[in-house]
Image 1 (cartoon, rainbow, N blue to C red):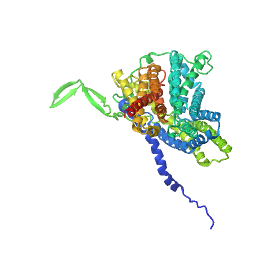
Image 2: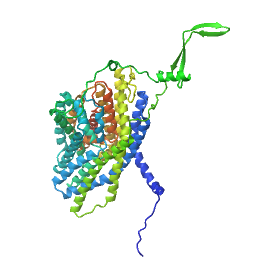
Image 3: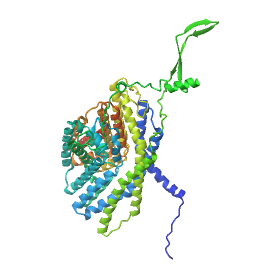
Image 4: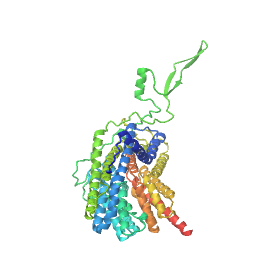
Length: 626
């Protein structure tokens, strides 16, 4: 009997029935990582600030697209980029000299940075920066955006190269961190003494958080694990640690050096050698700007439009109370008659603030152009990296006379990654960025009279709290719980907790690590809000914690330094970074006297390292005393 290849033919509905549980599981996994932060932001604006959500339909659709995009993107990583990275990480060190491995690591770091979803935020972050307040920062984000992204990529490439070389040379991570952080602090102090350079500090330190996302971290870890296996490191559970830390430090150095370069060459908007098209125009402050007219709270007072509608129809389509003022009261034929009375209709405030405003969609949004821009950006980010990985793997396999066995799965994975990143970037522009910017622009209404985000009439609303200090404290508390809750929802933190518990043989439990990291991120974001609310210099909030970190790093064991510093990387996920960055820029644009809102991500990154290393020292001491 001849063997026959039997193929089962399924129609579309049968295929969907088989795939539906898998699709649902992946969708719910992404929803789980995003629901808390979205609900928390919306609830704070509606219930605490008393302001409705603007563009609710657009934001809701955008968030849904983000979830679907992340679902495709993460599946694309699993099927395409991750197998490529893991295969190369396992084969490359065995068949390639050291210089070849280091060159591959350098190019991989650059390519992975360009493919990071959050890197797109840097390309749009310059819109809220005023050239007259921060000329150098404005130019970096608008005139030199390509240079900015390139030097960040080069910084990550050098970090991955150094991280791999560290495994070959068996260098201590502590001995690398201490001089690098010291250098960063010295450069930051120098920059802080100059008004132009001072403005770029927040951007530089935030770039360290933007680069360690869902593409860079797994790829460089796969390479690190492969190298450690070839080098004979028996404890592969601890392999790969440290590269993520270096990948978050070198971009800071790269951006600072780029800023110094343009400053020393007088090549930024308003300077002598500036060759750009932007011109700073003198902005005269009118009397209306100096003394803004208070916009009546539409929840308590009738508007001109409502008054006109009342004149036309005689009816009020809202809750109101009737009050009688004055009048001559007389008893006439057993009836009390009040003449010459003034009848006052008073609007009754709603017991619960409105959830959504009447503006459900931004009319300036062009879906067609946004889809096209997102697709082009996704292809530019994913395809070159994939081609580089495929070409490297093909060359390695060709030299060893082997064949790529999972070519079809990898091709599907790359396609999924492109589709996923396209949807993610589209959803980012429709949903996450407007939501974060909106809340950021409205948070200052807790302590200052400002124009609410998205309003076209140009009026202002009074501060929610009579005491400015109380309002600022409320905003700071909001920042803490935002960081704490959003961090616990990050899937990467759960994976790190399992690894750390295994490495420490249960001494540092998963739950303890997760809450330590979340607490540190909460403190960091609270510090970032404090910086903007009180308009504090960023360097005053960076130097003390990093000085403390240098001490804690020196006192901690190599084991705790490895995952303690890497814990900052897992807090900067694809959801947290765009939202927190957009929120920070929104707050910075709304608070008088603040030129930008950068710095929150930097403080959110340093917080968990401090808490993890501190708890690690306590755990190590308890373990020794047992």
